[in-house]
Amino acid sequence: MYLTGRFPLLLATGVVPVIALSIAGLDPWLTLGGWLVLCGLATGVDAAVAADPRRVQVERAVPRRALRDSRVHTTLTLRGPQRLRGWLRDAWQPTAGAPYARAAVRLDPDVPQRIDIPLLPRRRGELVSEFVVLRSVGPLGLSGRQARRNVRGALRVLPPFTARRHLPSRLARLRELDGATSVLVRGQGSEFDSLRPYVRGDDVRSIDWRATARAGTTMLRTWRPERDRHIVIVIDTGRTSAARVGDGVRLDAEMEATLLLSALAEQAGDHVHLIMADRAVRARVSGVEGEQLLPALVDAMAPVEPTLIDTDWDAVAALVRSLAVRPSLVVLLTAQDEATAARGFLGTLAGFTARAHVLVGTVTDTGLADRARTRGTVGEIFRAAAAEQTLADADRVIQAVVAAGADALTDGPEELPPRIADRYLQLKAAGRL
Image (tube, rainbow, N blue to C red):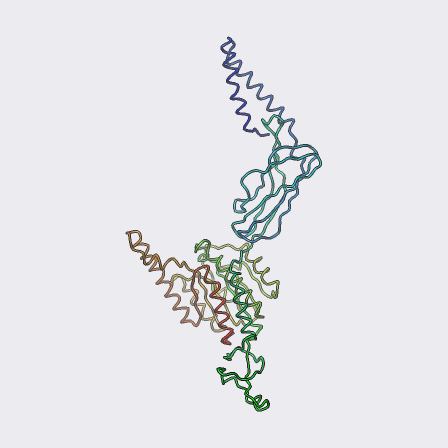
């Protein structure tokens, strides 16, 4: 049983008869007691007459997956043997973005009512609603009945992949590399594609003299990037991934870079392996090809959150070696902002560079440079000094990464994913992958 807002109003109206009867000579306390008894009886009868919400059947329809920050439509279907008027509230957690207002219920006997509950999830992972709370109100509107109806709904919220907008232009470049435009500079990883007549401006080193003798005209060999390369992407889920950069955390931007590079590599015919780890493996995707790759990646990434511990890079290196493949490219998405804290990472980096080409991508706050130049007030001067120190520490780590034989890319959360994709295409074009 519960009381509605009409009940205190009913009690307040008792002031009038109490005052009137007191003027008439009756005992005001007796009058007040009688009024309270009358209100209690009316409230009890109203709750007894209200429909029993426990007899209502509730069915839920929720999609299994949805993208973060995208609208999701869920429905509740109610059916009961009695006429019921009241309200319903769904028990989604606040990050699901469910409406705060209660949904009105107008249920007739054996006639189903469908209630739409729109969601706007604001974080990745599993969102769950275990029950709904259903209230029925009596005919007087003073009180009613309330019941919890257990009906579970689960929604897995996936990374939004906003970097998808960069994919068409990179795929166009990939098609050029793959035959629409010849690769004129033969690299270590290029394979023979076809012969064509020589055109002024072509690289003379690619002239096929035997074919030229047979054809009677200068013939040129064209090359295309090799396929079936293995790309291993490692996402650091340790404490540095929890830092806020832009509108989200660093881990979200690293996921965007992973999805863009994976989509591009899959179209190029390469094999993608994903490892998300700190001191434990949080997610792993390997051996998935074709159209199943991106769904497998986002499904594995969805529940992973940053952990406030340092990453064990020796264990990560051993895990990469356990893949039983010789990677052509290892992409390490991490943040090493301070040389002392990056000592373990830098010590392991040589082991990666000895086996493959290594690219280290770091999501950084692009506003640090602006803060380092702002020196108006005393507070701004202190913030500028802190920003300069952070930039200097990051620069020392970048120099150490380059000295170890790896490529270092550092940029903001919006800019880093396309830069990593462009670097992948450059390696393809140069025949180094």
